[in-house]
Length: 183
Image (cartoon, rainbow, N blue to C red; front, side, top):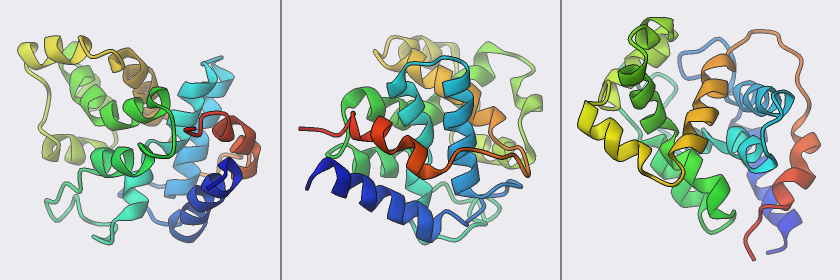
């Protein structure tokens, strides 16, 4: 597949399933676009912007419903998404996607008020995803080569839940994503 075909495939999934919501007041597509826009506005490197756009790709891949967290189910969307993207995009994009849930758990350990700052849906999912890290888990996490990229992604992820915010379109990010296609 060409880079353009890969991006077409990724965008098609956002276009057909991006209307879903997972406990937040924004759709998956709105959330992805906000996350990428916030990262770009903050001057993040292009691979972080790409990871921000793709970080919840795993939510689009499963058919477990939009209320899975309320039902006590963790779809492990970070692994599902990263595994699906691993053969399409370079490691610098995929690994922050894989680690963005671990980064949420890390922030819970690092910042005592972090849990309270999260939306109700994020609080619920954090508990399903293992809760706040222990000191030992945090030490192991920060030793990962992509931990800090995931931590930056997480900051934008947490902020990207603004209702009725105007964002660039998916197409705005096409060339940025194509630059990170494998091969």
